[in-house]
Length: 291
Image (cartoon, rainbow, N blue to C red; front, side):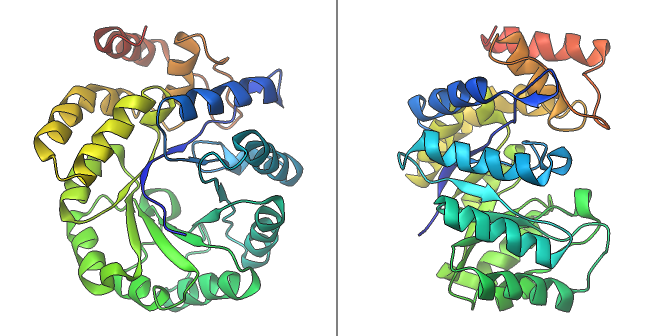
């Protein structure tokens, strides 16, 4: 299984402190109708850090059920405990996920060898296509291109969501791994430059609110139509900025609320968008024509 295109890191809507499944189903339909290539539940944007294990498994199973094989579902199953990551990945496998997205273990700061052994243990325990996820800004550990190269020799490790923000690092990964691993952008604003280097798509926050334009941008770049991709990139650029005014997913949930799609409820320690950021976000959405 190869993953490419615009894959949405979907939000987890809450209502009165509980997961709002009706709204989640509506959001999934909105994504599929607008050309999104795949759904990624329980990532950072899905507030996986504050979902209970039961909620986490339910969101994954529910997403798979609603999607019903129309597009791939890549379940967020990462943890800073290898045993827990294996449990979540086994659950995703049994629920029928097409793949799993695994964040590098955070807080405990493993070495490069520790990262290698962590992913190798998950790959050994579960026969599911795995997507590595590197985002040092959130985890305090950077998975080096040489480690990704080592992991790319494991047949079920098929892709990496690269969110280091370094195009030099992306370039090295592509150079070292060739076709053995698919590189996906972990940063919406770097999708186009990363695809110019050879990345095959993005796991995106922006697609939550502008799915068609993200899908079109990625499709244009995959087809080698960089002029069209550039046009869409510059059109989307103010949205990329607005969605990261505060910690993700605070702004994207506020944006979806302004669009009438969800309530803007987030779980502590995240807090609702501040009024000054709200003004800037509303301005960006209005200018774009989303509200």
